[in-house]
Length: 208
Image (tube, rainbow, N blue to C red; front, side):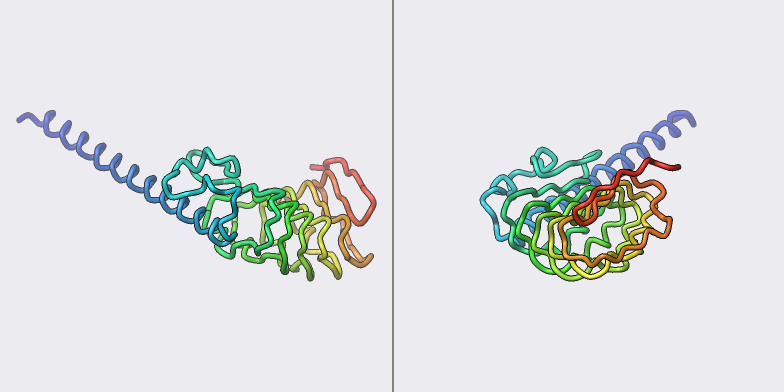
């Protein structure tokens, strides 16, 4: 056997082993995401509108409530389904989530701080729900957030100035809540395009 032939065999073997490992990893991640989605369905008490979320239907990227990028879940949209359960504490086990929309439901409780574990989150809509309490000061943990809608809920107290630390935030909707009249911009919303507070609307030009 020539040196060239030996080198070819080694390269071919390396390629096939690498390909096998990549396919195994992808399949493992897919199974994990599918399992998490079924766990979310169980947490929501197996609602009828999610009957297509089942163990035999593994093509979850085709489910209308799910958005995927390169085969991984990046978006979860469960809007206007009368959901009365809390946001699942394990939701950020979907590690690539960038878009979460639970608007127009009946979700109770305080702000779901488990969302802070979604390190890539860019879009969050929890509006038109039954949330109570204060917006947590450490909301700036969502460093990539571009869109935040907490309007038409029962959040109260002061709007935390730490929202101003969200440097990528472009849209902020906090209308029709129970906040007091204290809010300090402190000159921080330099990239904001639109802010809704209380019953008034301000439109800002983008400044970069």
